[in-house]
Amino acid sequence: MAGPRHDASLYRDRDAVPIRRALVSVSDKTDLLVLAEALAKSGAEIVSTGSTAATIREAGFEVTDVAAVTGVAEMLDGRVKTLHPKIHGGLLADLRLEDHEAQLATLGIEAFELVVVNLYPFVETVASGATGDDVVEQIDIGGPAMVRAAAKNHANVAIVVSPDSYAAVIEAIGAGGTSLSQRRELAARAFAHTAAYDTAVASWFAEGTLNDEGDLPAHLTVQAERLATLRYGENSHQRGAIYTRAGGHGIAQATQLQGKEMSYNNYVDADAALRAAYDMVLPAVAIIKHANPCGIATTAPNALDPIASAHLRAHECDPVSAYGGVIAANGTVTLKMAENLKDIFTEVIVAPSFEPAALEVFKAKKNLRLLQLPEDWQQERMDVRLVSGGLLLQDADRFPDDIDSVAKNWELVSGERPDDEEMTNLIFAWKACRAVKSNAIVLAKGNATVGVGMGQVNRVDSCRLAVERAGDRAAGSVAASDAFFPFADGAQVLIDAGIKAIVQPGGSVRDEEVVDAARKAGVTMFFTGERHFFH
Image (cartoon, rainbow, N blue to C red; front, side, top):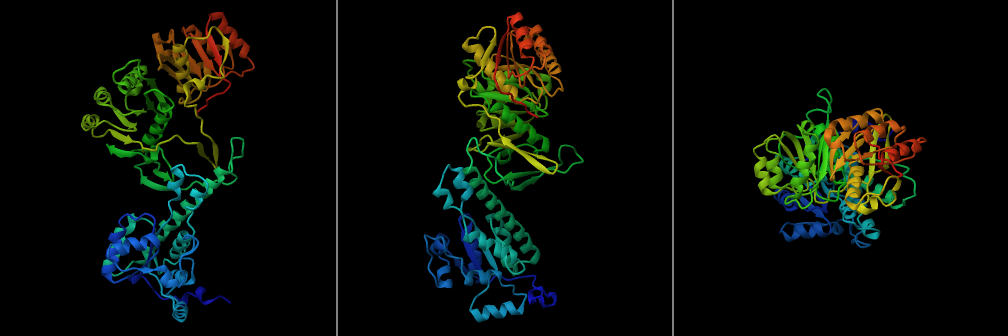
């Protein structure tokens, strides 16, 4: 026989719920006292714990300690304080049921109508570089239990997990109580909050069990929160939105300083631009169109303004395609760079910072989107890609930070070893090639791209496209190929254009034919032993 909780006829309607008693326990104390003041003015009892109670009390508001409710002092260095029937009974009692109301009265337990809880700063602690027990101690136990209990009982209790919701709750206090629809919405946010928190904890444990040779996680949960609804997706008939991951430090966490709202394609191109510019050690700029580079360059030697120099050199690679492009700089955007961009239509510029004078120049281009990266921006350690019915996970394709380490294991298979300057140029071309959609060929001179061939279904066409775009600049340049040449024909296109050095992974069954073509032409060729496909 079903118990009374399953008999719909026993439930009493309870839409507006006045707040007479609130449980408040927060790590993030932003606007805490604003909320406490509203509760105090309404006559609600505030029950609280530890530092939250101390903060409220010091501000002059009355507060009841949890220990006074439970009759048990906090124990085990604060690990146990709210896990008690007098707390959770007050959270879970469904006061639409007369039986629950009677049980509370018999047991001397008072109900809560509002719970304000945010959890220990686990994600922030991990992001700070902490390890071991320092991280473990930031795994909240009582907090998620209270949040989930109150969210389950949203028919009677409003659960708040973020200061962003305080204003609406304060308004509800003044209006006489929270509505059912409001409590249901808050409950949805609460469950998403605890889900994201648990995902972060599980991910930390999973990463901690791995080593360089270890298996990837057996279980993977990707938890994200919608940041904004976009005008549309990749095309106007597709819906689109951007989501942020807990602990993320990428383009989704950038601050938009000016311009129109970002589009789906803007975000894709901005991320691709970061991938290209931030591979470089020297001041560098990448210009991207449809997720492919129009140009990548580092600064010219002894340039007075390194980042402006890098931009001009990247722009020179393909000025036509750079129209309407997305730009990423790995250093502060200067006034000089801003002035150089005044007459160039650009969709987005993303950088770690902007000189105030540069921002003044950009104000004249009101539609230009400026994105400032978070201070703790970092390249991802793992790549995730959705496929139908599942997803793919892999280690992110990264280069060593030390430029000399990039070429440490290259094998010279043809010609003479270049001097240091030319070797640096080859390393630049190899790094730039990683940012180009496969099949990818990059021609470079002086640490700047002069021709890019990308996205072709055979390597010969990519070679021809790179040479065509480089024009006269192909002669004397160096070339990088993201994967091996299956035949000598692609390499021959480069050789005939006057390329003097080629870097490629090697590994084809016809490697010897390719190397012979280079030897006959007196062209230097390196095998890297690894490829850099980018699909």
